Structure formats: C-alpha cells, structure tokens
Length: 202
Image (cartoon, rainbow, N blue to C red; front, side, top):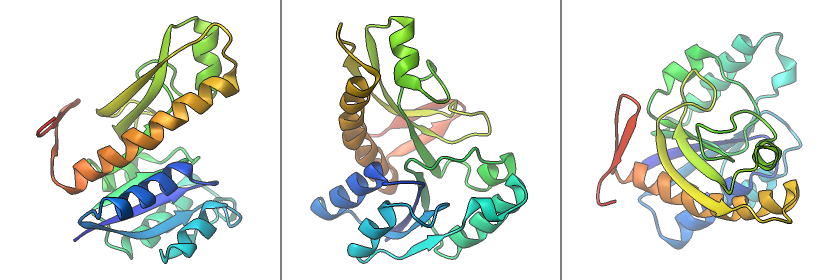
C-alpha cells in the first residue's frame, strides 16, 4: 500500500478533500501523516480526528531555510512516503529538498500555470483581464510554480468577480482535481518525461 505525507500551513482544505476522497473511494493508499510548519494550523485537528498521525516542524525555530528543510525532510522520511503532497504549505523549498523528492512531490497552484506564479494569483488574473482562470496540479521543481503539469481546471472570470469570489470558485475546482491527481499517482498512472506528464487511461 502506497504512503502519502501531506504538508500544510493552515486549515488545509485541499488536505481535507484528499483525505475524504481517499476514504470515500477506498484508495489503495494510506495517509501516513499530516505535517505542518505551524503548531496552530487548523488542519492538524482535522487530521487527528481522522486517526492520521500529525507532526509539527516549526519553521521560525530555524535560523535558515536549509536548516528547516533538513529537519522537515528528516521528519517526512520517518513515514517512508511514496508521495509528498503540498496542500497550502506556505514555504519556498530549497533545491536540495526538492531534489530529494523529485517526481514524487505534488503541489497545487491557484492559477492556470505558467500564468500568474507566486502570490495573489486571483488579483493578478483580475488585473490582467483574463477571461479564464483556474488551478494547476504540478510536480514540484526548484523553480517556483514551474514543474511538470499534471492537471488543470478552468473557471470563467465573471464581470462582477472580486478576488474572493474568484478564489472561492477556483478552490472548488482544486478540491476536485487534486484528489484525482493524487489517486492517479498512487495507482501508477502518471509518468514524467522532461517537462511533460502522461496519464494512462486519461
């Protein structure tokens, strides 16, 4: 049975969607742990209520990104994961950390990559006047928000959209495509060649 470790920084709504979908669909996988860089992350209580082991590696306790990433990597590897899932984990990861989990660490970004990397993506989309916005599941690489794309979902940008209203519609799509992509990975349906992802039966 494949093991998944999920990293969060806050409420972890995508983590919750993955956990609930894995239960409902009876995945051949175990959510081995939910780990946060913040002790007060609301998602930790959700994980614990579902019997999932939790751990905290507090980022502000470390003097450098490298020191934090080393400690985080050690904690993750205690659970021997086949896949690491970033679900609202608000840290820029070091190249050494990313390389350690190459092609086995997924992230979801709230835009249609390669457009609108970084933060405040929904406002970026509104400011740019695009007609479609959305979310992207991708493998994590050393370059921020530029890894091979696994899945995308688009929503129409409405004339009266605000940053919040657009964010809410995109988030609903995130909760659909992220669990699906995680399941495809643990079922061995995803292959990566360079910057391109192929999904069997897709």
